[in-house]
Image 1 (cartoon, rainbow, N blue to C red):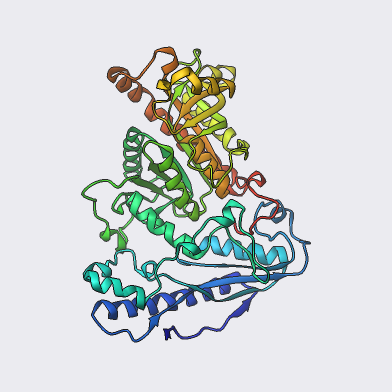
Image 2 (tube, helix red, strand yellow; image 1 turned 90 degrees about the horizontal axis):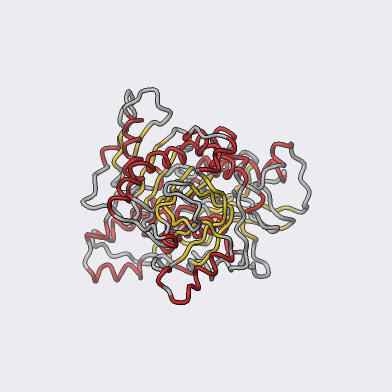
Length: 497
């Protein structure tokens, strides 16, 4: 016998605010039902049946492909369905996604002049995804009691979390609705929990512009800049968040209640995250992904569910051209993908285009920060193809085969993460860009030595980071709606951004 929360009948809405309120009502009732049952279970009570609660859903029906909207709405690359039919998706965390859901609901109503149907889905909420941020109730149970959870509650089902929609391989069965979003609610919840684990910070702190780096030196500079911003009462940022959800508020602002829950971790997580927070969530998140394409894929798989406006790779690379100098910048306009971690999800025959808005912002940011303009800019920054490999010691392979391929591809730089981040941006419709800094030239005898490395890092890291942050400022100022390019959307695309 299933033990369900009180039934909430589906309703139709033409007001996005009212629709979101109904989503929150269903979600809160479901989560409360699971938490109360879990508390009883942990206390040793006999749960006479299987406890179940399901996610809320939003559904629309359309019978035409036509749209009559204003030019401002019509130029957006999202917010509409591909054709007539029934479309739906499950929803989670309306507290976290309230602004996002409101925008998607509003665009659907404006584009299609239909009603939004809000109801309870048949997709169970895994009990693990019902725990509050700082709940660890399962840790109080013995192994035998934890095993009994399988009988009493729904556990995460990986079959409900695959990326078939994002990969373009999903095909609805006869009678099934078409998807409205790239990610189902269980897939979103799974990634939200993974983000806590890998970055050491809660998903509610993540901002809509993300910088990735492969060196701790960049993080050290970001921390210094973040703390300096908090000491400035005039800063546009209102908080700086470090691993362990340690929150520093801007001078003059009072601490919030949840700030006291933050605690510096005994050791840094695998890919620590840091957040310069703006009130509208258009601040900057920086994540040190470490070295390698596996890490790059892993973290972008999870950050993608937050639907950021852009992510940019700032890191070091090997310069492949003799004319390059240590400290020169490389703006990627193409990628050679020898990272292999996305070969199954995104075939190699799929091109990864450069996105004009990101490219222009990065180039302008280099000029603004270095104060080098016009033709002289080419003396410190080269635009070209970046190759990413999963073999850190590629130069030791026999017969110079990698070198031959890199030469044939016209690559000007090599790293281990940039192509992965760009490819996953393309796959998940997240605008992406890459600006690297040449730290060695192995093909020309200039390898990293301790003295050279320390001097290089001191000279370039601060400048490189400021360039990335300046690029975010430019992208923010031009309007984020211009970032979500139609280049990233297929011809049978989901409606949600």
